[in-house]
Length: 216
Image 1 (cartoon, helix red, strand yellow):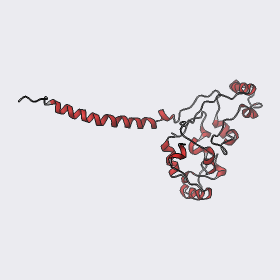
Image 2 (cartoon, one colour):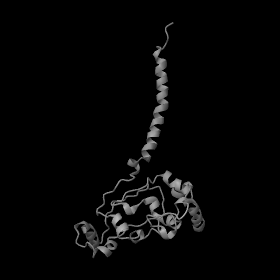
Image 3 (spheres, one colour):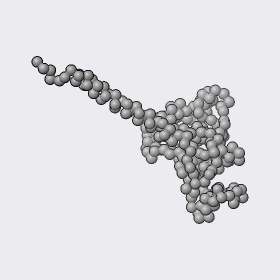
Image 4 (spheres, helix red, strand yellow):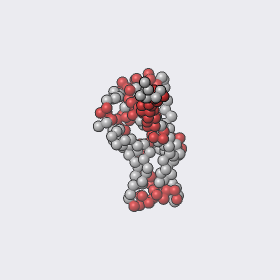
């Protein structure tokens, strides 16, 4: 009796079954790799700004504290963006005729904000509060990297959910004294974990990992 299907159809069926398993697995794997890649997270990618602002110069050379420009970082969810009037506190005297600072002068005299381009961008469904992190001893460097070494501001960390949860699950080694929050080169005087354990007890650190902590 002639078989209903040719002999090669058995191998073809095995190939189809294999593809049905492998293709979805490959797509999921590639998707997971993509969302974690620097191309998706924009990690270490400089952002062009309307004014060439050199954090390296202002932080390292001049010694300006982060909180001078980001004035709401200790009391609000947002760190705050400095108005043109704050820039002009110095630049009405320093480089006050430089062409590079024309956008700053224009914004100041027209009483309009400088159209800075956002560097650190979280999804709209993520809630992040700067003040609570500062209050618990998490330094600017932990998330923003060595700002004092950046001629152009870039996102130093991936800022993925995994990045945040890794810190929330084990925050103590990253803690520092509150008077060193804005220091870029601070080092723990002893083992970071042991020192962090002391600070966690002093600052009453109880990091949350529940969904509603960030997704509100």
